[in-house]
Image 1 (cartoon, rainbow, N blue to C red):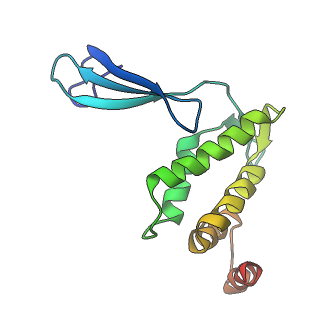
Image 2 (image 1 turned 90 degrees about the vertical axis):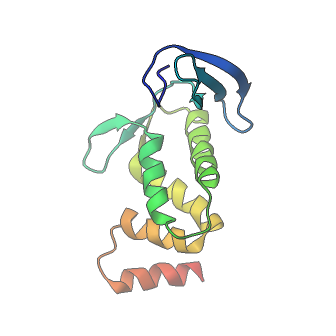
Image 3 (image 1 turned 120 degrees about the vertical axis):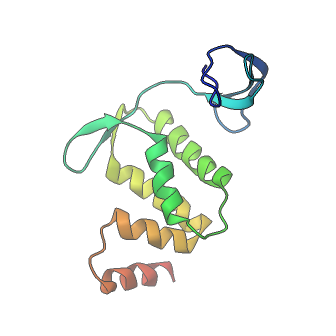
Length: 147
């Protein structure tokens, strides 16, 4: 593991433990060259294939999902920890299924279901991009569903 501060490959694991909610291992590391301490997470690599709306296939990328959720929750009181927990929950559900691939539309629906419980404004923001709202009437229809 390279040090994010100086780029050295000489790092030492100071502490290792299982993350509370996921199958990830959290490791505290220390750079032996500059002394910088940082945290890494290791996750099981069992690829899930996402089928995009245009038919292209690509591996599931939790970072892409996190970027979309971060945009939807700008200026909302939702922590990064809550967003990661939401993604962990989705990833756990995906891995528990018997399928090796899933349509992006289904992942979007999974996100919306969880966002509706977490924050209604973030839900509408995410839905407007995910469902590609074209006019104000589509926003109003979605708001009426939430009421």
